[in-house]
Image (cartoon, rainbow, N blue to C red; front, top):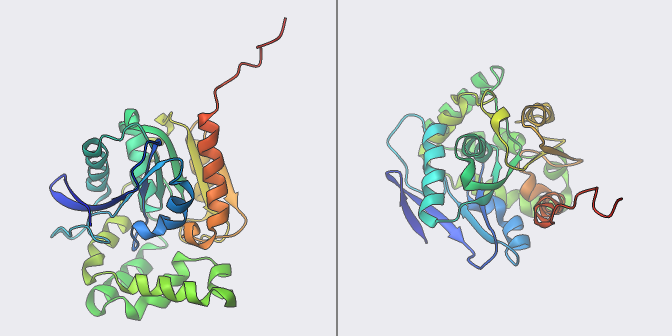
Length: 278
């Protein structure tokens, strides 16, 4: 189990190695590196794929704080990139991972070759969500995740994934993974609920940026992706016809196609439209 001492904590990470350009995968709240298994499997032949667990989640160490804030997680990611010496890399962040990716792209652009933002937002948590999420988090802190597992599944996954009878085994797997979270996951949840906006920073992002959102995402609705697209100059927006807040595992073929096409577009040499004329 590879661990790296970064920014005063221990982070778990997985690295496929290889000579290809590095991609760093940064997962969403309540999950781990497993969220990107379909993408790592699809891309590891051409890229060096690195996925890590945020502090307080997965196999990484848990700090004794009431909220794991996004600024700390941003510094963790920067420290990981610098210690592994993999910059500039392609950064793929989903939800909370996107909060981190936007900060890196705006503040430390020399570390990134490209940025992919999935199911994420540059805004603070919508006020309408805060009371419900705070209550769910309190219940999870006091009684564990089992009492809140069903409503959390409806937040994390889209209607097609949740209703397809042929995917019952997958749903059971992801519910089991949800329940594997330690009781102290509440510290990470507080960090997301209380996060600050970065909407004033993202217009400065200049690295090639892909924004991906599933049409069934109820946690970060497609309108949030549209807003990001407007804020980040030159960004590309892909709206998936299916998929909720965990589209990487709900619709891996759609995500892999969008991500693969984006990465390949960065490999092609730019040809001036004037070449061969006159």
